[in-house]
Amino acid sequence: MSFTLHGIAVSSGIAIGHAHLVSHTSLEVAHYALPKHLVPEELMRFDAALEATRSELAGLHDNRPLYAAAEFDAFLDLHLMILADEHISKTPRTMIEHEQCNAEWALKVQMDELVTQFEAFEDVYLRERKTDVVQVVERILKKLTGQPGHTPPAAKHEESMILVAHDVSPADLIQLKPHQFAAILTDLGGATSHTAIIARGLNTPCVVGLHRARQLMRENDLLIVDGGQGVVIVNPDKQILAEYKLRQDQWQLERRKLKRLKSTRANTLDGTAIELHANIELPHDLADVKENGATGIGLFRSEFLFLNRDNLPDEEEQFEAYRTVTEGMEGLPVTIRTFDLGADKQLKGATRVASNPALGLRAIRLCLAEPQLFRTQLRALLRASAFGNVKILVPMLSGISEINQTLQLIAAAKQSLDDEGIKYNNAVPIGGMIEIPAAALALNVFTKKLDFLSIGTNDLIQYTLAIDRTDEEVAHLYDPLHPAVLHLLANIIGSANKARIPIAVCGEMAGELAYTRLLLGFGLRQFSMHPAQLLGTKQRVLTTSLPEITTLTQKILRADDPMKIRELLDRLNA
Ligand code: PEP
Ligand code: MG
Image (cartoon, rainbow, N blue to C red):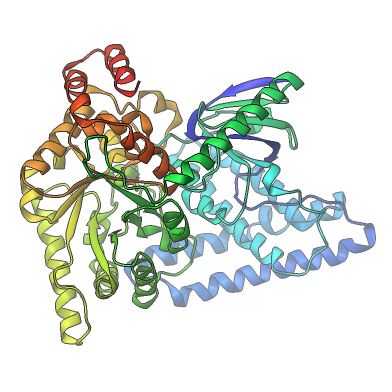
């Protein structure tokens, strides 16, 4: 039966392929039957994986992060307890014996059942413990896959597979980077959640907030995904399929044409130079940055170096990552954001679930609460500054006290390098992200104390409109064109320009073609976006005349009716 699902459009492009449903965990689990004589061997494999996991967890006690020793111990004890529980250690064994299936599958089925039970708990704390169950099972699964097992059925071609998940965390999705799924679909998520941002970075069509896609689809269903419209057609008929194949060809042709703009300067029709920088998550994104002709890196989300691992990157490892990117950019600016951990980007093993993670100990607040951790990063960043054009960007600053504390910690890190005779650029520019309304409304102190600013529209909109950017239930209320947002943006850009302090936008709005002219009209001259969006934005800049858009942008700013604002925006983009 053919049917259509509508979700939130995250990453454009048309994909045609077969559904590959993944479970709660990002790990793919094969399911295959075993001949009876191999069952005892499979049981031994399962027991060995449990034992290996147990010793790994015990070993982690010695390796715990200094900043959270007590919490880390509690988390290890909890995980050891889950591991020993018969639901994990015995029930899958019974299933292997009775159903003659592989150990991974038995474990996954049991995990899914436990997760469903945990989700039904009224108590928030207990409900959240499902994450611990999943983490323990992931550990065992890794041990199982690390051992010689029975060969699962041959893998399908990823290029024609469409990943369908209930939810994927940003940390999980970054691990999918080397893979080549034709598209990514999730039941949960909002357009500017970090998961969506990473999906955009994979340059793969993506639709989130589909609610029940994983329930409604079956493995191997034929799917058409229109990432730009947020539409998924399941088991389309021949005519629809032919039409989308045509659209897919056209879209690919457009992308190829855009490639020709790679070395063209991004000047408006009236000759104003616009800087188009790239956002990256990890050093290996550098290839994309180069391929799309970015004139700098406007946002290196350094926290991704901290995810998907049991330990923390030390100063040397961080320094190498920052230096690689800095040298790779050959003198062009490289803006490295100090880690923005917390909220939806949690360190592995973090056990405390804040009641409002987006309003909790996140980004600079976490850095100031854990100065040792911050110092390590600052030293690594400063050391990298000796190798090129590094700028340090601080996320989530809300006011003068945080700015002063941050500047003091940077001074202290410089002093420690001086004491050891280590080189760095003493004039390394320090910038602040404007992503909290308080910062936008009290901008003076930012323009006085910092060297540059960058607007994080994703969070600025989230906090201005009180909309959780990761929650698909309220995603329809997340509106970059809300008059309050537009006024904040116009004021921040105007004030920064007046104070002659460089200002960029590095949130998702910067890479959305619908907003390019609007932001130019507000006075923005520096955009930072995902590499895949750069050439499209450049094309829009090349066809824009600044004197011609001024009147319309001012009209948009004066309008308060959403319909009128959209109508004016359409005229601006016509
Ligand atoms: C933002 O908030 O707009 C931003 C660029 O930072 P992040 O998306 O990583 O929170
Ligand atoms: Mg942000």
